[in-house]
Length: 345
Image: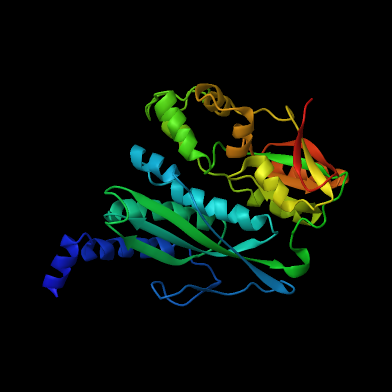
């Protein structure tokens, strides 16, 4: 048996390191268990009970990753936030359907498994799960030396949520005359990092410990690794007042708001209706990025857009304010063909 393990290790896979990583991760998983958890930690699958009191429950599932933001974490040697990014991103992706999270599974893959790094990454996943009261059901820790270069890893996750079928948000309630409420992002979130890294480390020749221009004194690492905001607390109390929600990820406002618009209306976004944070302007000017591309790649300071009736906008914004999230009325819904268009002031 020792000979087999030695051959496998020489091929690039260290079973002892895998066992050490799994032991650390198991402790993190145990720390997320709730009353809905069923079965043992370390089983082949994760089990979770459906909550009582949900009429005609529909499961909502979503899978995502954090993209090349992991390369910034690797470069900085700071692995504790990308897991939290992952959970929050996925929570937002099911929240836009009106769903609350039930459980989460993560996938961590590397060229050479470092148990300490794996545990640090998963600690962020566990922290995000605890913040939303859902168990980390399990996942996969893979060592693939011929796929990833030494020191590199990738991260992805799957979330399962639930919503009453009659309360699910699809965008079909959106009407002309509705207003668009934009929720402040906490930075670049998890999108556009291939371009962002090229501008920061290439065009601007910045180091990780240098102050990020326009970042209020924060370092490049601090700005680029700021945690992707979860909007659950800001939205959940007023979900019944909403006609639609759009999580502003890859594709920016135009590429995501369009996903919840019926083909009889347009979303009209008013230019200048919110203050674009200075770091985005740094990328635009420092990288020579055009305005149209900025709108398609980055969130520009708006991480979520809610669509609601004008009479409900005040309550929607008050709930966000109570949760510590700033909002702006950034536009309206008008008759059209299902497009997003920008309106000059």
